Image (cartoon, rainbow, N blue to C red; front, side, top):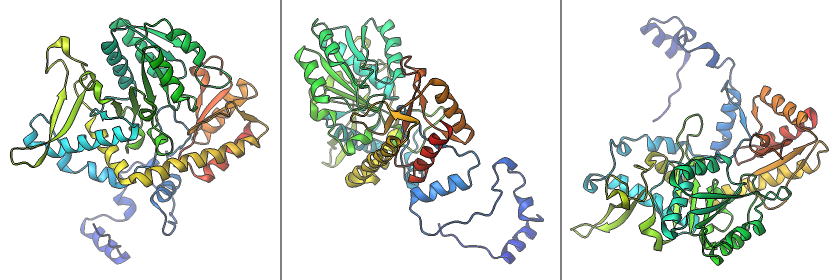
Length: 448
């Protein structure tokens, strides 16, 4: 829609018609703590990220600068995405069982599947699952069904909450988890310990996370080869799909299943928001996958059409043949993810990924010049860095100081790893400006 500014005389006449004395009186129902209390000097001709950043800092009274990742990485989502997904054409009351009246929904799911399979270097992808954690456990259960082996290997540097979900399922689904401590000096998996466990020959799958919970990049080729050498399947957990805008995806390293979390490329992350479980695998495993699969075909008039091909849950087939009791996919988030990535395009996706890398390199160079903290791990990484403080009291003081300044500075790793009791996990994405990064360095030098 077009916007026409109002003259003072226009405003005066309109207020008179509605019998309101002033603009202040017009907006008195808006709580005082969320009103703009100052004139805003809007700059000229900014790009969308910069203009959003400007309004957040200068108008949003509750805005906090974010340096937290931990599996929920917030990225730039064009405002047009929220406008598109809010259109009535996408609203549906139920599952698209009836293909004749659900072609739009089915096509969006099919295109989502195509993007996920391409992104992960796999042949097929399902219509999505609840979140990264449920996608992970569904992958484990799938390998157990395929191999008839009830033991899995999981390194402890995957997302700790994903590991908790797996342990909860293990109790009820009667399978065993062998956890492998990661190398505390490198932050990466201990491949020798993994190989020793694989040698017993009773392992259904080996899991690894890329990037791992500490931001490090594992040797995918080595881990996938190890699993296959000893008759196990490999599962790659990917909490940050943007990494594959720059690096080779797991499917091209012969990973059997790739799962991930896609909510960071949706317009809504935060308190209580659902996730977006990504799930991709090899075509030969088609009959074992959980959730739904939409396919493209032709109708009786030889026109392209889309259908719900697989939905192997208990309500549809015999219970003993169901691959999962998950009853749905996160269609709205999948749609938002699809639109965001489509708007990026291949070049744009690679560009945003590169921006993440460059800003983290910039941050790490500045950290190397600081005498108050140091980088714990200097190996290959993406988006996250572990900072080591002199002692725990200095770390706690720094986090508290940043909280008072309205900055969510990162994760105290002692929450999950007792040996990392003076370490902070900090995340930087394309949404963090150079000014934000410079300010954090000043704060480290000031408060630590």
